[in-house]
Amino acid sequence: MTLNIKHLRILGVLIAGIFLMTGCYEEDPEGAVASCESCHTNYAHLQDIYTPDTAAPAGGCGGTAPHYEPYDRVYMGGSGFEDYKASGHYAIGCTGCHNGVDGTANKLHAHSGNFIKHPSDYYLEKCGTCHKEISENFTTSLHHGTGQKRKVTIRSGLSGAEDFDQLPAHQIEGYNANCATCHGTCGNCHVSRPKIGGGGLAKGHSFTKTPDMITVCVTCHTSRGGHAFLGVKPGTQPDVHLKEFGYTCTDCHSGHELHGDGEPVDQRYAYSRLPKCVDCHTGQESSNMYHAEHFDDFNCQVCHSQDYNNCASCHIHGEGARVPAYMDFKIAMNPIPDIVEGYKFTLVRRTLSAPDSWEKYGVPEYANFDAFPTYNYTTPHNILRWTTRTEVAAGASCSSNCHIRKEDGVLINKALFLFEENLLDWEKSATTGITVDGKIPASWIQ
Image 1 (cartoon, helix red, strand yellow):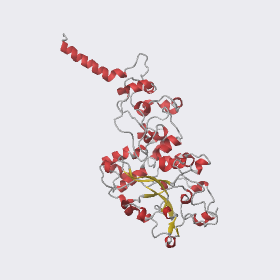
Image 2 (cartoon, one colour; image 1 turned 30 degrees about the horizontal axis):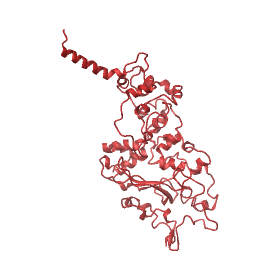
Image 3 (cartoon, helix red, strand yellow; image 1 turned 60 degrees about the vertical axis):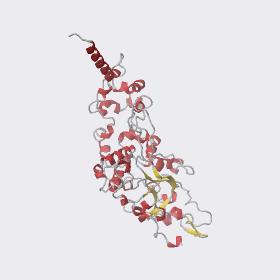
Image 4 (cartoon, one colour; image 1 turned 90 degrees about the vertical axis):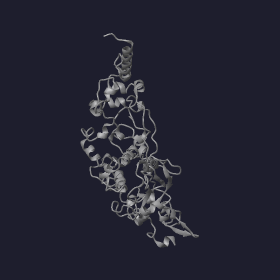
């Protein structure tokens, strides 16, 4: 058959199209990128073939995530890669976890079929092959998000975490785009940076048995844990456990606690392996007059915590908090007496949720917002032995820095306690029950 000019033009277009689809992925003369490893350790090649992001960086209560370029997030060279190569995980091979196809220079072919970008999203299948007990227990772990899912579903009018999948699709989308930037799976702590930390490989695909406190724990537990522990805020000090003893998170919070024990719990304070002050500080019931008087009345943090960060009414993926973050200290009635027994008064912290938190995701208002107070039981990680409550001036009574009293017509120490007058209008119905109005001695405020 004789080819005319028209046929030649069509043939030229087809050849050009084939080159555009496959040419940039073809193996080079030396086979430098003919496998998963050779591609992901070749930084220049990753820069040539990467796919640009199509969505904004992760958000959430930790703020906007830092941005790493797509090729930086998947580059396996650099620090940690040699450790990975010497590990048992390396011996499994790339397709053992990620599926897809190895031994090819074609990016589309390598990532074809049942390729999995984040294998630990399927942790029961992928991680559970070797880490069976941990993976099975993690299903009900609070790190996996069961506690937060429970509150979202109950406030939405459903019964609990088990009904999370029944929420409107747009609300689940909002949860995944915001809450799940921290609440994730195995790889978010042990292989990659958390999504709120920018995502991507942290140390050349090396698996870290004990996650780094700063780049993992504090990245998710920012102002409500990590920054308090480190003493970041002006006027605060590092927690005594860090300052004097150099403790990190895992000195108190073990893997058994963080991974879960397979038993579902409503929230973290119901967890059986939660560390308690008395685990280390034994015999404190009568060690001084303060303890002898109040050891069973309120949690240790009422005396030994510094001011801590609060914020309120965050819009999920919206314009931020209408009540910006602020430092405060509030004592209220124990909001969870059925879980933390014995304490009448405890520290509480203002929570993030508001009736219209999910407005940006098609839910104008929670159906059952008042199911929980807007102040939670809290145990800030900013402990000091001597605080503004434990340091009493010479000759003053032990109650001088805690009890409310009048001096020259002015109420002293009232700001330490949560009163109904401290609540915004939309908080009152849910929270008045734990305020101290009518529940502290009348003589204190008369």
